[in-house]
Length: 252
Ligand code: FPP
Image (cartoon, rainbow, N blue to C red; front, side, top):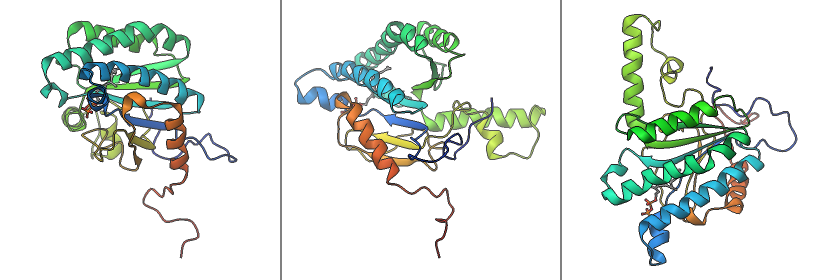
């Protein structure tokens, strides 16, 4: 499948400004949300899953086609084993509990990140979720799990170099040729990347893909994130001027 590209939604034909086609979210602040309430950090992650459910629903209602969320990074292995286990268990529970509804709602589920190193039951579940939703086109939910952008780029570069060497791909190397090896090869680039919790970092998330994304840093902690925050983020996206390296038409 051809990669849909970086420009605004080509199907849009004027009137209201187009909703961002692809929103990516760094769901940060679960631990602080829990600590502030005297709860264990894992309670923050549990509430984070509820915020994710709300956000998927709101994004679909608001005309977003692609939502990508960062739920476990290749660096998160540095956390205490109990917390890592909780995050794995939450992914499993989310897919088991929500897959049927996501399927019925026309949601295509993808999981990006390194598969190697995932427990076999999680890997099987992820593969099942992807296979059972492969024909859905209404909404694209991508969960970045065991994902790190540098890791993804190294995996893609290795595979591309191999393909160029064995002749599967014809040289010279190009950006489009390389992108075909990224985990996100079937996704358009994100138009908007949101990070919650008041931190101003990208933290190894979609470094290649977010080259022209608008970045929005919100103070809200992820478990408190909801429809109004998403609406507000989209409103602020519309206030930005995107030039993709060009100049504003008519500028002198
Ligand atoms: C960052 O908050 C959040 C994470 C590392 C995990 C995000 C996971 C979820 C929202 C729930 C899991 C969802 C699925 C589908 C598996 P933090 O813990 O770093 O917060 P802090 O900076 O306040 O400590």
